[in-house]
View 1 (tube, rainbow, N blue to C red):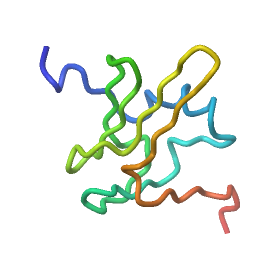
View 2 (view 1 turned 60 degrees about the vertical axis):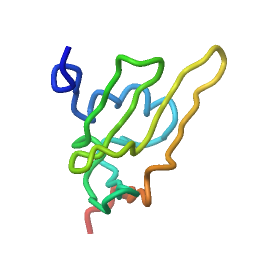
View 3 (view 1 turned 180 degrees about the vertical axis):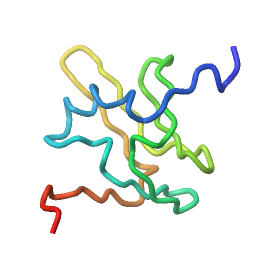
View 4 (view 1 turned 60 degrees about the horizontal axis):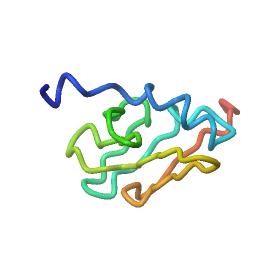
Length: 92
């Protein structure tokens, strides 16, 4: 199985991220800690075939975040995210 055949877009993480955030995280803009690319989380690459879900930068493939569910817990590692820009819903 190739890397490309396992790759999903960032929207595949929407359900799991909805358990953590009170907003649509796929529209939040993340800045990659590796290369500085800023893009909506939904544009990044997701790999969901591991014990957890891994979100990688669409440019450099650095790990932007990991989310893992265990019995009674959800673990979120955002150490690869330099910044998270969350739209406030007010278009003005």
